[in-house]
Image (tube, rainbow, N blue to C red; front, side, top):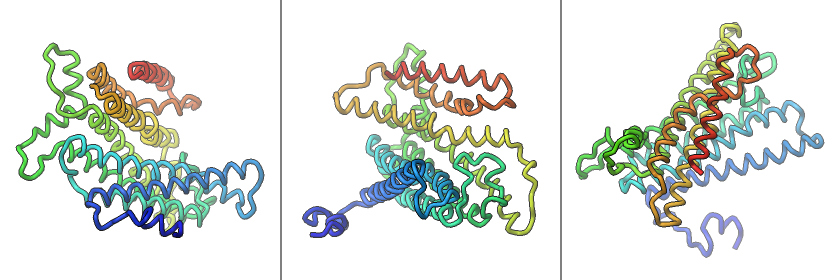
Length: 355
């Protein structure tokens, strides 16, 4: 039996797609897309490391920097987002013992992540569009170095991924708050308050203890999804801004780069981009470990109310930690650089609470 046959049909043809539920098929699509782009990221990573040692035949410097531009985005959006979104679209309804709000919308999320990632990767590969993933202004709109058409399709691909991300956010919060058909009416406002940690934060300072409506892992997913929403909105807006310059160039109009303040643009872009690393990732990882700890031990989490409060505080703190990218910018206001040091201390304290 060939490897391909086993891969498609399973060991001893044990994989029976016709028997899978729509939910199982949806989750498997996310897994497959995530693993395919993980393979892309691994291959590109090895190519770049080899190139750093000695030039690789067939890859010129322009192509190398195009790979470097797309590589982290493929890893983040194509692989990690796909795997994480698929996992949480399963976990939230599973832990809340209710159906997912919309399986078709989840399938759209998967499709947009897959198509969007391939679009920006392929556009960068063909056109050697290489402003690097930081997209510092005015590099994304510098058409003396990069192809305007390649850049246009690159940014369109990013936009498709962000639209898929918005669909994920809508699905998660609606799953938490909606009442399935035939069920007794559920308190949407109270569920949302519990998921975001507002009720838990109030309970932390109250003598009257109430049962939490949403489990701690679901609360962590909800709070990480808040940062996911901010990230999607900021990067989508930035993509539209860049597209305005690209479409203008295609139509024969040369817009002035100075119309966009480079420092303000950098602050705005890094605020959104860093929510991935310092916001949603930390909260998602904490929620995953909380779930594993309770499943493995069979016990409730120790000091759960403190953990809930810490997750809420971390969510708020994560909105400002992007400033650690700005410490070397002499043009940054002194108060802005000082604030980063305060944020770093808060993150350290939260890490201590979690441990």
